[in-house]
Length: 235
Image (cartoon, rainbow, N blue to C red):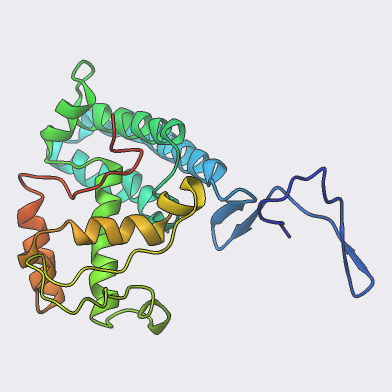
């Protein structure tokens, strides 16, 4: 059991119906390590370790693969590690995000056998996106499915439109939650997902089907990135 936001020294135990329960700094729930501050630093560090170990495996067989098959192996075997429950931890700290970038960059270097190009050039080799941009794509897809009621019902009420009596050119905007801080306010999934959705072009948000939305979003990100002004996207 963890007590969110509580220092270990402040609470040594919890008495539950005569049973003494000692708090932990983190707990593993369905493969996601949740810490008491909800930073997910340990979880992301574990992901990066797995990615680096799998990259080491790719090093041993890279000479037997051409670029195409090396990229297929990297996407399916290595970079897929960043896809599991990514919406939970995607708005991490800048320091933690640098660890993700280093692990991603190393995997790309081995995949394309390029030891000198900077990270942005490595991304261009196979038309790759940063892990954060990939996460944003998944997030926008989840928002669309919630609005169209294509995902589990507990998500349907999470995104609501502003009740505005006049028509906007940008089409109805999602209602932003009341925020009183940064870490548990503007840096949360509930806030950032709605801000990015509101900044998407109208034609994408107005898609009638999931397939149409995916196609429009894919065409959009060929030339631009999904709008995001979180701490990871600001210089």
